[in-house]
Length: 498
Image: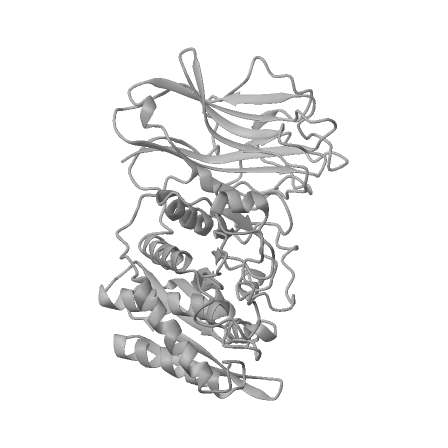
């Protein structure tokens, strides 16, 4: 993990995002992954390193022995495997690719992590932990005879520690059509750090810092992982797509990605100790060192993360890309006018919400999430980035009246909020439910003092508490900071009944 930075992610500014706090994912029947099984694989990787000069590095016999160990288990379990060879630094490296029979190969979910270590040590956390967890999840797929809608492909990469060489060789070997068939990539690199944090790759750039969001679909991956950790009461935080692990070549080719990271050479802050326990030392004091052995693992983190991998694979592979299910109660894709009206108490002097075909600017998408029209703040481009953005306060637009039936109700929608670093948390886009004299916020995304590029996101909210009522939806945006640039849009609003 954390190979030298060779692929920049800063240019990847467009993506589909879902604020994890808004996810309403339902728990799927994923199996519990026995941490003892994962530890048994780590013990084998340790033994391989010990027998081969103390490491499992690219071009060394310990690496090929590691590939052989994983391959033999997968072959026996019924996977179709292949070793893909590549050359780097005058040595032959190998990727191991394992396909589970069945599923739609035009909709392939790929799960990967690097199998190599540095030359300094056996690499049991980095990245025996991710390799072993992925292996045991793959074996659980076989044990349960899981037959998902999507095709499942697992990968163990070579020479990640030398600059993502194996995963890059794999992606570069694919045709355009083959790349298009990979509709999601899950990366698990260092999931058992001894002083762990619980970081998820920030698919929607919801923290508003560093690199931008991942490609369209990355936010769904983040939200699914977040839903698992929420279900066990473990808080998570975002980590950037900074190009230092094997998701790099995937996101560089527009493939959605996500994953877990428990920390490397960085030091845990006092606030993170309050959040997760541990100490203010390094997340992994043995990072890239000879002491990264079988004793350099936090069993609790390894257990939680192995189960999170299984949960995410089961949820995303079995219908994870299908549209919201249930009977449609009400929807609006804004291709025709359905009677949305401007708020009567708006204070914004420009950039007010309207149904329109938006012009493209650096802070506003020129394409709707679907079709031609959306609800957008100030659709006209203007002469500068700050022209026709929200200025001077709030803008609101209200739906026509919607009579909700009884039952379990879910609101789904697409949205984005963009701003420059002159924004703050006082700025926002939000959706509220107006029922009689009561107004309830069901979704909110705040601004931040950082650049946030426009990128379509998906969100959802549970509306079951409004069952049997007649409501209106209120879409709102605010420029409440001093001289800040704010643009927002909403599209594809749908209410379904389960």
